[in-house]
Length: 311
Image 1 (cartoon, rainbow, N blue to C red):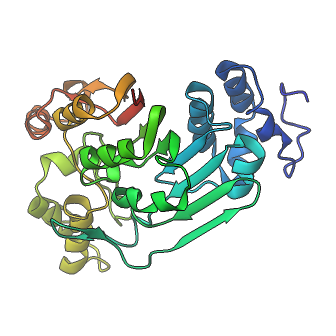
Image 2: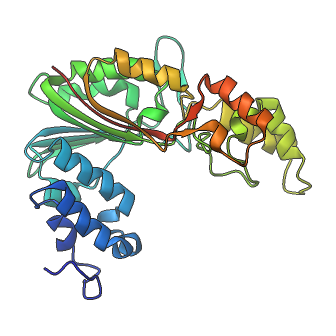
């Protein structure tokens, strides 16, 4: 197939996507992906965007997913895509709807209403659930081997974990020796849009979740002269920014400690969009000092690309 142009590609022909997983190296696969970016963003083959495919392909060639027992941690790729493109030995997907419902927890338990689980053994053992990211260890009984996994794929999950260190410990107990972990997660609290909330009816200025307090953010929302905004709505949006359990709001030093203490050996950890806070020209000098103080860091990043292994 010719990949230099997307003009003659059948929008329903998925062989293009399949071909990206049958190349000899990552660079060649990403070249095909980039040449066909517009097609992918328009047609969403397998319901995947360009960004989705980029990270899946990155993990596929970096740590290997084919013919392995894979835990997809924090998402749920379609069975069709997994069977036709990745072709693992087994696959377990753990996802959670973090936008319509908070976690409900105390110090002893983390739970959520509406738990669902499905499993099958067609071409390969396949299991998916919305059980909850920090309770992944509860699904291990669906696999005959113990521990069940030798690959972990995680995209946009760790920023949602209240206790990522605890979760990484649980993940380690489910992994065999020499298991590889690939994780890419963004945004995090230190990013300009690190509040991770896109449903506000009014603009949330970059970094304002850090230089405003909870009450100051409410006042900011109420400063808009709008008949559609009320105190209760302002409090609702401020709640999701500052108090909802949808994100963990860890600071850069806390992420550094999480990586240092994790029960995996780090092969590579790369801050995404690392930038000095003082370099953001839309911040006043007072705002820069406040953001640096809150973050306990002079730098901002929007997430991390992490590759690690269990020795």
